[in-house]
Amino acid sequence: MTKLDAGDGSTAAEQPKLVYVRPQSAQSVIAENDIDLESLGIKHMPGPDDIWYSVHAGSDGACLAILTERAAAFAAAEAHDFLPVSVH
Image 1: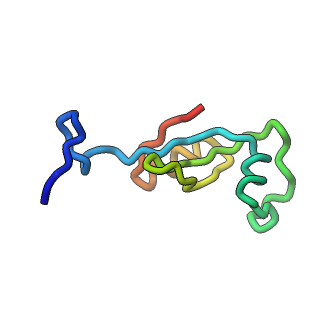
Image 2: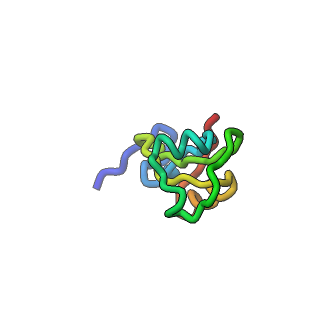
């Protein structure tokens, strides 16, 4: 089996799996992802200043999760063996 050199002396298997945590307007997240708030137990539409956090795969940018708190987004990523980084 061939190991891929990452250019810094480590192999690809040793590289952390990055995910990006992106703050977004809660209202735009709901609209872009067609989220049914009622099915999630959310009783009130978030206001224009409410921020949610989307977690995106580092490899292709796919959205993996949406959370209402930054700390929860980082904790969820770490719980799944990802290395979260903030994107502004």
